[in-house]
Length: 346
Image 1 (tube, rainbow, N blue to C red):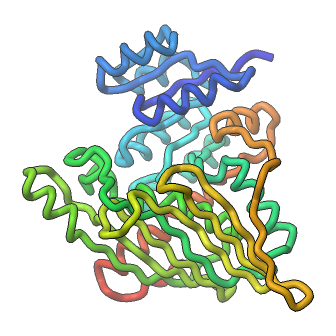
Image 2: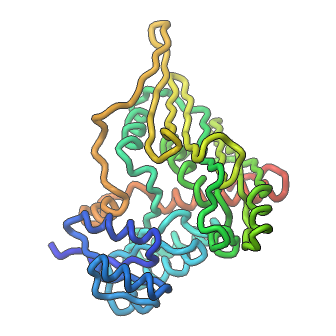
């Protein structure tokens, strides 16, 4: 079989995309693009990629790509995704899908019109532990899930302080759209993406704005946001995300789901990026705590999986419709935070 020709735009997170695609026997990264010429040339040399461009649109035009990865600041997700789809390529776009739901819906419409796949890189789904949790939920061990809380807090962890992450015109928001989006998608996926009804949210910028002022840095997004989502099936989900909060841990991540038959709790270990999963149930009048240990289901990266789904002509794990739902929820939390009122969805 002829290998899929892949192009990657953006060489920050894009480096992970390149490495992920290299694992698949039917994929070949043939071209890369980045506006930073120094970083571009360095990556091309290190990765052994002969074709590289400072203009992604030129790359789309010249290379006849089968797949394009978009790993650039959020502002450019929509225009570059649409351009790549129009060029005839399938697209894997970094999270968040776009700056807002309106942009995400435009991207979805173009994917449908061009009949090309559009995947969103919600990478926290693509771990053996996440797949094990999904299997547990789908087996019915938790019963009906009626409450959840999903969190990503940092004590002081503002990425690229003074850069595009903290500039709303480029990012669309702060930790909610950057970190919270991962934990939100994971919880929604485990809950089988119930249909949202309304949202209440708050956002704050007490710590980062003061630091930015002292350092004369640009920073006009929140440093902490939280929200409560009510679903049409009666379930509730709380979400919290921060880059700066007065907590004990350097980094604290968790997702808790409560069901009629049991509960599940995933949390990070030693303030890092390794996780543990516990399940709590009552059986025969006794309360049991279970812990997830190996072996767990085999799992490939989001990049490998995206290629595999194209080759095998099967659905990708993350649908663009789910990406749109996430953007609608983020929009609603930000709107509720700004107005101080609940926001209806749909």
